[in-house]
Length: 230
Ligand code: CA
Image 1: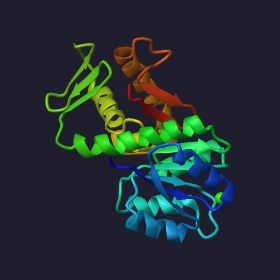
Image 2: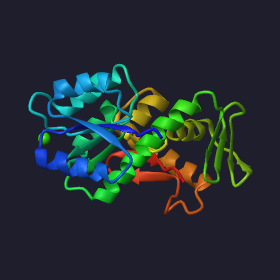
Image 3: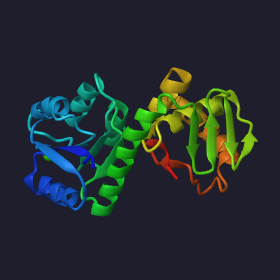
């Protein structure tokens, strides 16, 4: 059976020991890098399925590592950092990180995020040739441009449809406001964030059973949105 490979990028021995001990309880293999420059080399040579990345490294900022890796690879990156400001999360996510955990973190939550990242990397690999997206009772037929909830077709405006497809194609990944604005409107002005909220609200009314407690599209306050795998 294939053991997923995790690259741990962390210079603090206490934290990297905790992560290794946690991963030992699962069927994972791992490799540790303590500097940014060795992390970039390992991201190529070790061919990990997921990277766990600290932002404060001795030789480099983690955000620069994300940018470098994104130059050639889409592999999932989970940032684990002591920086808890929204702006730090937004910078890391905008640079292309998939997810963000603030230290100290719960071991269960950490493992759940790793599972989400692994699922994303596997479904992405098989989604290329598949033109149907299914997630719980939500279904998108990309070829026909139709969306179904519980088997019933629902009518979305072109903007709502684009927004839903963007979230669906990145299931499990937190997308920042800036990223969504750039992808959908081609611009990323802070002033556009309120209109994004309006589109999100109308989309939720159409796909969520209870729009005030959404099952599919999760809000990350001050950061962005994430499509949850059911
Ligand atoms: Ca550090």
